Image (cartoon, rainbow, N blue to C red; front, top):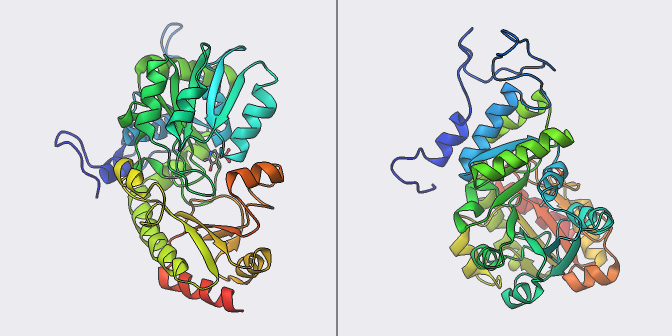
Length: 387
Ligand SMILES: *Cc1c(COP(=O)(O)O)cnc(C)c1O
């Protein structure tokens, strides 16, 4: 259970009630979907507060208020995908600006930075942010932002959010954290001084693998206003239908995360003892190099884990292809458990050298632990190893 100050509702309560304004007309308990592009005006000067759905929509507004309350932000915009949320935050910067980002960044973010924004004149330095001295050394006079993503994908490296944010602040740079892997239930970067949090709500916040979406949460009202302006100007917002699905998903975020991470720890311990497993990457294990830091800044260890198998690719392939409850698929954070092979799937766009530098090899297998009974998942992995 999360601990809260007495004047604040608990996290689980905010998941259920955040942003949900009861419908006054028919007394529906849930937020209605408002599938309308436009809203009529009461006079030539006044309207309901909504005029056009690209700018704002009541269903989307409910989701935005909910997530802002969960992250503890001053405002939120809900976008069409995680990538549009990231693009929205990056639109704060201009040609010539320099941005520091982690070397093992989410593949889609790396592509946006390295192959798109770089061409538009932004500059990037990618560093292993588990070494704070390397982050400190990467600052330049025109550094305008530091991008944080923790824990990383797929090897669950943990970055010290408070330390990186303090460096950013000292250099008058904006700090932005992709909090997709843990969700606000397990980690709230704004509490460590981060200026902006982004999510792929496709993952844990929605949690049911049935919609793609994203959001940008700002710590200050000024930033929130600027982000909302960008979101409207670039047309990045999500549809009322998608907002409604994510709002339905987020209501169970606390209990899903709790159950999924408790299963992940059991699976990690099972894998640690398995003779065909060389190494397990899970911040909840005492053997994880940043276990102490994870205990400090996270309220739990999440439901993503990776492991290296002995004997390389044939064993990795055997486990992936013979598991019956784990679908072989990209993505994560849903109630269905998924298994993947980063080399040919999520990290295929990296060069072999870049993968090797990041520590991703043909022995590496990644798991997103779902809501199935953990013993069934362990039994399934055991039979997959031995088949
Ligand atoms: C999936 C993901 C994204 C991109 O989100 P989409 O909804 O697929 O656009 C960004 N960051 C992280 C960490 C992700 O896992």
